[in-house]
Length: 353
Image (cartoon, rainbow, N blue to C red; front, side, top):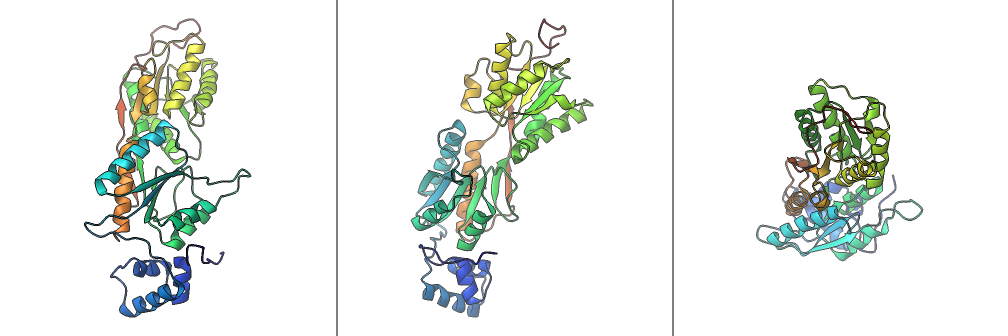
């Protein structure tokens, strides 16, 4: 293990803990003014904090708001980011909290983890951090732990380490709802286009699809399962592949709205109409799902509510509280529009039956 060292912003809690002969969590409790530490331990840690010049993070108590919270996002120019930002801003306004929003360069152009951005956040004096990123590395998790900075993940891509607080949606139930809707319409040949094989939310949505198919006694042919990388172009390729099958599906569940739009455009390029020749269900309920023609039937993911919940959890952690569960999931719901209908009873030329 790399020995933690002081930074330009001052010594880390790992350094304090080592000098005082205590654990990092104990050093963090003393630095944050917690009461659950013995007087002797508190005296020893406080002496080290003062001697090494540790800069204490702002801590909130009842009726007092922190000066600054960081919201760090993977990108700022997408409808997804806009919904997350709206939810965080609304919750921050209600709590009287100032929020700084930034896009993090988590990797360099060579593909190596980029470390400097966390140091810059720490130097700014933020009291806590919200992360809506593709991923955090092990080294970055260790950095956050060593500095004792409260943080919450919004919809993490990969399974976070034990004890890390995160907020997401009921992705599995959303996959079930989307598939059950198609089954209720009478579809039996239902394909699925997932995102990435390793992404947590996509895996859960695919599992929900399989569960609903199994509950209905419907077989899932291997060729009915594909992955489009959560992007429109990937879904267009998968839709072309599905349409070329000897027995193409009559409906498809795509695990994101951009992939739903890609599937619809692939069908339109072949002169096939949605939902007449193919029903399409997507996931997210981003603005483009409403603007599409036909409007996409989709599973609504409460992105703004997720961000607001994450910020409120962060405020509790900054006040010294610990949430009861490390993973909070908000409910998804099916939004019916015009991209789904019962399957046609007869096959049209060049179209699925």
